[in-house]
Amino acid sequence: MLTVFLISIFGSMFVFRFFDFLKSDLFLTPSELLILNKFGFFIIFSIFFIFRNNSILTWIFFVILCFLLIVIKFIIQNELKKRFDFQLVFFLDLMILNLQMGTSFRSSFKKSIPKNSKIMEKIFKKILDSLINEIPPKNFALLHFFAFYEQMYRADHTKSKVIDRLKSIRGHFFLLQKLKLKSSQIQKQVGLQSLILSLLYFGLIGFVIFYFGFWNNQNIIMISLLLYGMGLGGSFYLGLKKAWKV
Amino acid sequence: MEGLAPPLKLLLEVKRALEAGETVRNGVSQYLEKQEDSFSILVQQWLNYNSQNLSTEKLLSKEASIYRVQLLYLLEEGLLGKSIYKKINEFEQEIEAACEREIQDHLDSLHFKVLLPILFFQFPAFLLLLFGPLLNHLKN
Picture 1: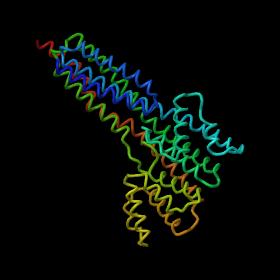
Picture 2 (picture 1 turned 135 degrees about the vertical axis):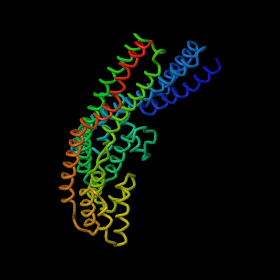
Picture 3 (picture 1 turned 90 degrees about the vertical axis):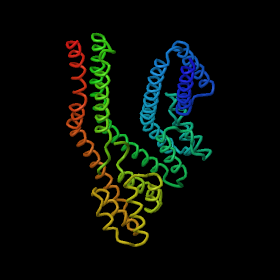
Picture 4 (picture 1 turned 45 degrees about the vertical axis):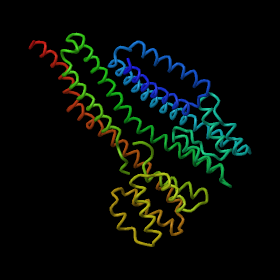
């Protein structure tokens, strides 16, 4: 029971670390974070009471939970980047139009903040606050937003040709998106192929366990899993790890 | 292939500096502040050579990418005070096209490359899982 308790404490540290990431990346309010923490406590104590007599099952559960949280973090960050890139072009278009109407840089920024997504509104407001206070946004977990802040900071401090400067920033992000779109084809291709193969493979594992049992064939399944994992890692390595030659 | 190609990053940084009325050296310095890859090490060395008025030909001959070498030669002209903004704009399109070609080449060769781990690891894993338990069962 003590071992299970210690494993639960280890797991809870990981879960609360994840919530902390959510707080900084999704700009959660303290009350929202409190609700999440309560939910985390509930889950961890439930696991502790369910598996209190079996430390191996608790380990397995927490390893799966940790893996899932890492995947969720990755998905959230990717989704945030995608949404930000999508909003960015509209934002810059609108800002240039506002500037052309004679509004000041910061007012144009404020007017152009997208209102259709709460999280994006929070991110853009955070950037504006940092521009006004001249304090770089340290709590940005994603460097992606910080790069944009830097560009806007420089544009804000440009004495002349602000519109040209913004047009240049827009061109820079256009180019970045265009190349990203192209290279995302590689990720999609490798990801889809791996997904289909993995579905087939885990279906086959299920079939083998169902008909022949796990304990009778545990060595075969483990070696096969190891080989499959190596193959999967190899596919991603060859597909995604590519340094520019240009 | 995360982000932009290193020479494109340098070029955009210099272009931004020129548009803001700054010098080429400022643009290069700002690029060096942000980047920490193999190209930035070369750029740092190249900048040091230029500051000491040494010839960079020997240093750049080690670099395999013609785009990186040409960009640094172009920036050298900028450091000497010549106007390079127009050339930079033309070169940007060249590098952009080269990046697109490289991504396309990588995509084309990917079909074969991804087959290797499948053939040597994933296919044996499938075979082992298919026939291993069956043979075990027959043996028992």
